[in-house]
Amino acid sequence: MGKTVAEKVFSAHSGTDAYAGDFVEAEVDYVMANDITGAPAIEAFNQLGMEPIREKIVLIPDHFVPAKDIASAIQARKLRDFVWKYGIENYFEVGRGGVCHQVMMEQGFAAPGRLIAGADSHTCTYGALGAISVGIGSTEAGVIFATGRMWFRVPQSMRFQVDGEPDPYVEGKDIILRVISEIGVEGARYRSMEFYGSTISLLDVAERMTIANMTTEAGAKCAYVHVDKKTHEYLRGRVRGTYREVSADSDAEYVSDIHIDATELEPQVALPGSPDNVRPVSEVDDHIDQAYIGSCTNGRLEDIRKAAEILRGRKVHPSVRLIVVPSSQRVYEDAIREGLAEIIVEAGGFFSGPTCGACLGGYMGVLGPGEVCISSTNRNFLGRMGDRDSKVYLANPSVVAASAVAGRIVKPEEVLAR
Ligand SMILES: CC(C)[C@H](C(=O)O)[C@@H](O)C(=O)O
Ligand code: SF4
Image 1: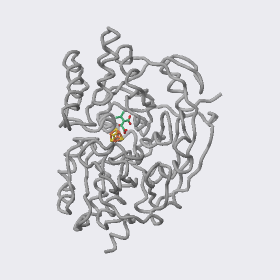
Image 2: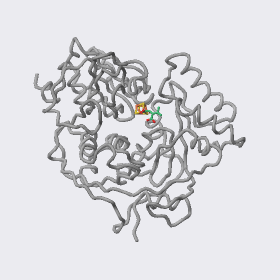
Image 3: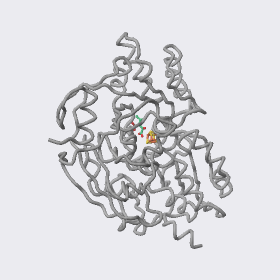
């Protein structure tokens, strides 16, 4: 019987002939942790009394750094102490890193056919390059630090076929919001989501990352986006070591095969409370207090370019705070070099260096009671970005930028016509 990508990658990494439902002990290529999950991972590792497998460990402080308070300074310090004690080379300090998933991609850790474990739920992101990457707990990460291995149950897979050329301002974000609204937040629980089709071929790696990133919001264990020329172009000059491309067999078994016609889509908005409560933007009407562009979902150079295109020569609405946070130091540098930072700042927006910060209600953009935010991030749960009585709408960066100008949720065309 043929195999899905997940079945192939777990088989190859465990030296077995594995299918969905099988338990395997697999060799991971890399294990990643951030400042929040790294400290407990190190504690778990310390209990084992073993030496770390240095070359597999990647540590990226991002959530509460630059330290937002004393507790986060202590937490980040635990990572540094571990890095210095064991000479961990793959460590990305403030000013040299950024949001963990962006760094894993742009620094060449993610590649087709690899098995990567990350102590963060959005580790699925590297599926954008054809890697099988899974979110794990801190204790598990600590064990992998010492052994390089972990047990997994091989997930079942769902197939998604997305075809057609989307309208302008319909982006990867809109495709994945549409998918999540169709299958629900538990629709892919412990499954692998594979993406194919002519629309996916048209998307750059940045938008593919948005799609893979948000499979987590449907409960997925991992994601896979078909590998093509764009994948290899992205990898050229950045990938560490060699990689082996893996593709699904034509007779592989999927639990479902869902088709999406991208030509029918307009930009999508997830209403406050849940990423699966999605409406086309034209059906959404609310004022906003804050507009946020950033995160591992949509904080890349391509996203900031889209925002700048709308903001150029315009002003942020007087009652709105626009906060733009690049997802990595590299994105930050490029945005400055390209003049995008200037456009945002001249429009009256706030532009900073990379951090998770406001995405999870950490700092630098926390919402107060009753406040409304439109955000390019991936989660809008109750209280996600601040007070339990605040509201978060999720949208693509073009819609967020246009809404920042309008002071309410609008489609980009509405602002561009002014
Ligand atoms: C802090 C971390 C454990 C968490 C996650 O795993 O997703 C965070 O990144 C988030 O997005 O809520
Ligand atoms: S940017 Fe947001 S979603 Fe991504 S890792 Fe950070 S907190 Fe989690």
